Length: 115
Image (cartoon, rainbow, N blue to C red; front, side, top):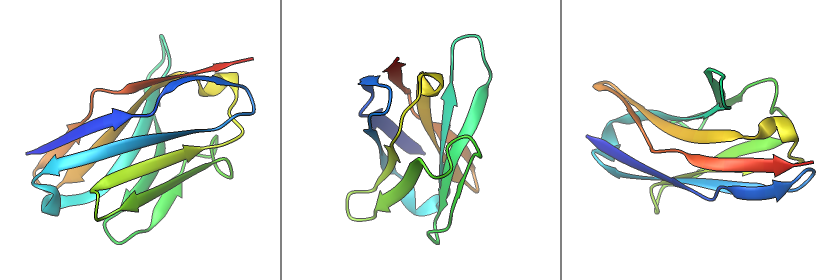
């Protein structure tokens, strides 16, 4: 199994920045990729960004050029740097680990962007 803990959310003004962390533990050698998703109230959970075990990245169109996903293999942590935040980025952000045995989710961290 893989355990994930997100942190770094909070209240941010529009135009500001925040960095989310996703710390992984457990059978991390089975992880093929880490995804970030977000879910706004009353909305479905949407893909935000991905980083594969090989280091390749991809982003949702809505965050391209503003968000950056990266990882620290020593700390077993994946980061989501969020810049130029907009009120519509307000959501609970979740990280997810994709393994051959299935996917695992963290508990989520709230990001609120005030206008």
